[in-house]
Structures are given as structure tokens and as C-alpha cells.
Image (cartoon, rainbow, N blue to C red; front, side, top):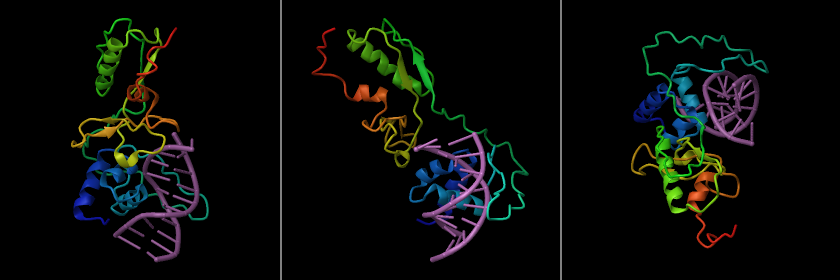
Length: 191
DNA sequence: CCCTGATTCGC
DNA sequence: GCGAATCAGG
């Protein structure tokens, strides 16, 4: 893949919106995060919002003059996307299916909780339920340890995957694994 | 270990 | 110009 004007524009846009290099690389496709970073530097787009890290190298090469770090004309660009990071919502398993809390992306998952609560009233007494908020990973950002539970319309730009910790054995995080592998034969569990 | 951006340097 | 390798840091 090459840096067509079009792709460079997308790069500029996403970079200014605060997406990380790897996220941008995943969006563009065909390039690594290194490629993105390299391009960003060549375009002199460094430092947006809050650029962490600017410490001069100390080994092997003379530290750069460090003219960076100071972004001159910073128009009131949109604030760095809040982007829900890896967070959890702890919910005391409701005795009655009355989960009504809706916090952005959590809404969808919340509905599931309500459903399972109604469908399986005779399950685990009352253990906490940890509902993961999507990390909004795109297909190319998935690794062997990220939950591959899809969220949203695949045809939409908003489509992404849960992306939470999935462990080595399952392709899903603990929560989505429960949804995916609902006990059918094991349902009759004496207790 | 996961991730981030920064820098170098062979291509 | 490009980007893998590498570095430094969270």
C-alpha cells in the first residue's frame, strides 16, 4: 500500500482526532503502526493534544535538538477522544430482572443481562457480573488474547469488537463466552 | 506482557 | 520517502 493523498488525509484526520498509531494503521489497513508513525513524523504532525514521551534518546545517538513538544498554532481542535478505555461496570446481579442502567456502549450488554436473567432464573444465586465495555477494536487489532465478540453493524464504520481479555482458551472474554456457550445439556445441574 | 510514540537507518 | 527494528516509557 502506498500513501495516496486520500490515505494521507485519513491519517491526518484520525491522528488529529487522537487515535493511536496502531488504531489508525488498523483503519487504513495495509500498513503497520510503525508506518503510520513514520508518516506522521515525515508530515510533521507530531504532538497532538497531549503527546506523551519526548525524552531524548540517551544511547548511541546524540539527542535530537528537541524542537518538538511545542505545538504552535493549536486551533481549538476537538479534545482528545474520551474513548472509553478498558473499564468495567460492576453490577450486583439483580434478584429481579430490572437492569435499567444505560451508560453509552454498555447499554447493549446491559440488555443481555436482563435477558439471561429472565431466561435463566434458576442459575447462579447472586454472583457479581462483570460486564466489559468494548475496547472498540477493529478486525486488524484483534490478537489471540482479545475478545472477538462483534458489536454493531458490520456494514457500519462503527463496527468493532469487544476486545477484552479473552485468555488463551477462548476467543471471547469471560462475559461473552457465557453468552456464546450457553449451557444446553448441562442446564440440569443439580445443586 | 500489553500498549504508546520516537528515532534511526538501510532500502 | 518508506517502514522495520529498536528504543524509551506507561
